[in-house]
Image (cartoon, rainbow, N blue to C red):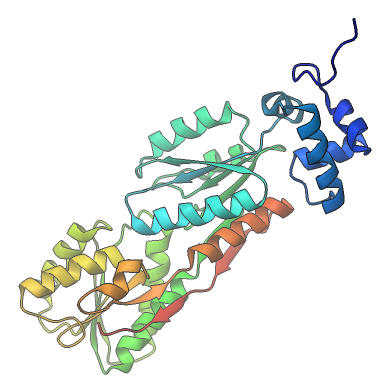
Length: 331
């Protein structure tokens, strides 16, 4: 009795290649989603797979290649709307590369980050895209990068890290925001919010200070806080108590700015009219507020595209800075 070659358990890549009339290597290229296979070859191979009932064993392929087609997106705080937007953009562009994304949240905890990544390594992840938590060690990040595992850090830099890093141009964004407030004639300006343990805080503060120092008569203050609404409220309360003459504030992000605006409303102060307010991120809600929020726009798609360029070309480009844009509204 002859063996039925269309039995799913016995069909091999060789059978698919024979039915498609192409080489085994071409079938492998199509199965891996490589752009090296022509559209005509893909059509033939996909038709042959359908005819033969071939099932691609990704686990076995990962064992052979020492990696899978799985890309882990390791986000520091998914409760932050911008982080969620960024995760969606990354997943979309990763899928367009023919890869599969998995998403995990570390809740800004370095130990959680270490434990989650160690577990993901058991699945032979092809790449890690990591927004590092505070206190992430460069040595830990560097050792993740191996011949069959790519690593890209995003949104934050870790001193001493040797992995590619994709960031918005934080310094330029805060510089432009501060210059815009100075252009309104404001001379008493505060920087509100941010954690000194993360690189984007220092980069944004550097832009703020640079703009202020270009003009001799500008007075500045800095009020740190957690990077959420509550932090914004507390920092603005402290600011008004210490600097009642403050004319405007540059906020670490839009969420902090929302807290600032809430507190100002409680003091019967209107953003834009009484105190200028500029955020950072350009969340969807920012343009919908009763007083639309001026902000520095970071395009999540631009970040995702830059990351996927690195993944696709397997490059070690060091630092990639994505341009940002000041969006001036009523606040």
